Amino acid sequence: MKIVICDDSMKDIKNIEKLLEQYKKSCSGTEFEVEKFTDSVELKNMIWKKEFADIYILDIMMSNMTGIDLGSEIRKAQGKSVIIYITSSNDYALDAYEVHAVR
Image 1 (spheres, helix red, strand yellow):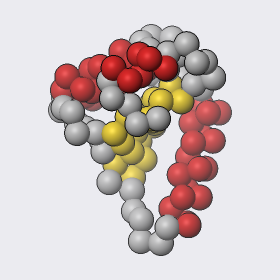
Image 2: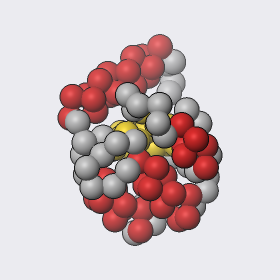
Image 3: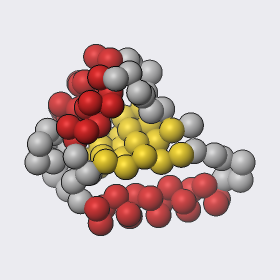
């Protein structure tokens, strides 16, 4: 399984990685690779190349492109991936539902 994290804060990416490692340790036999992006445009380019992940963990508020816009790109390219949004703002909750985000 492939998990992609996209957040323009490296500190937040490291925190998410720690949580994923804790999950992996608590669920023996669970294997996944993690790919990290601090630039949403780089991830968008990967999606356009049809290089998909099983799970996307996206920050909503990023400098180049919002996580909502990125989620829309993921859904246009293929609809099977799970999208999880992380943010400190409640302003985008309804937008997240439009791309069928899990959380």
